Image (cartoon, rainbow, N blue to C red; front, side):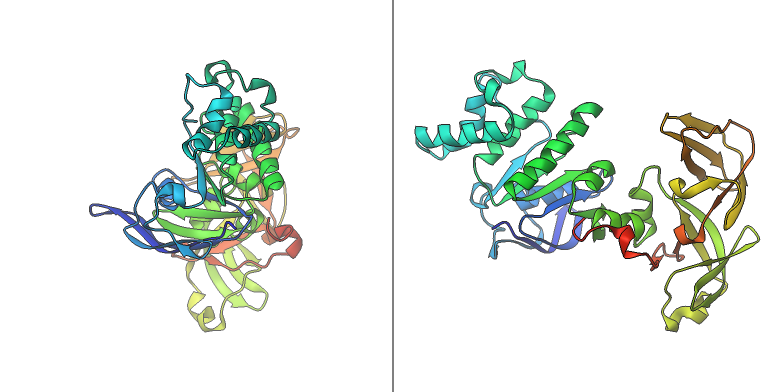
Length: 376
């Protein structure tokens, strides 16, 4: 149990469309993450799955049953909110037990389920405390415990870690991943943090402007983004996009002119469109972590205006002539780079991506080993 299908889901508020024809299948036992910038529709989509928002159009199907008209409590889901939503006057035990008391479960059943959830979440010694005496991470675990005792088919998480500091967020990411493996339940998780998405998800749904920009395993999105939006959103720092001109298309790939240098990028182009691509303006994508100092397949001179020394990494930002964008590179932390001192940087053509004038990727040839194991 725990399969979900969204079929052409739309949501409008007046004349403003927030979700625009989203179709998606979530498999039983999958950890799926909805990620995207603020206003992309990810939380609205989650709330429609939960039954907290009505759909304007389309069907929500859980375990083969259309649930559009069912109340949230009858959908077989449990939701964990960003704000914890705990009752401050109740103990941890009573907060976790609350949904069971609403269902009029027996005292013996309540105690058994609460103690089991507390053991899973390492809250056994806190059951008689009140939320005000707990840390942020402990409060979030209480909120998760309240969901666990209902034994839902699907868990929904709406940015549950955004109120925590950086160290606690990292700890809770690990705990949630372990919890998913332990319970084997279907989990759908909403976040704007692509690090959370990359580290936790079996598959990621990248949303942009109410549409799905791409669905795939984390490394698939990293190595084979289907468009410039995904290329810029997945990866930190974001991918550099540089203007190039197509010279020719061959079986080896696309030959482009980059700053007077001829580069052949190993991408696939349908035979029907090869002739129309010659002379076209394209965007070459290269990730900052794939850039080195010195010579390589493609070389460019940059003058970093800002350099960040992070210990493990050195990150530099350099303005591009006649463009608003900033070129970014990531070196090892031992590499010394100074502000306002010109350097030559380079990258390999095997690390490059190409995008057409509409921002759509030309499919990149990637070794299977780069994409990691199936399912993320």
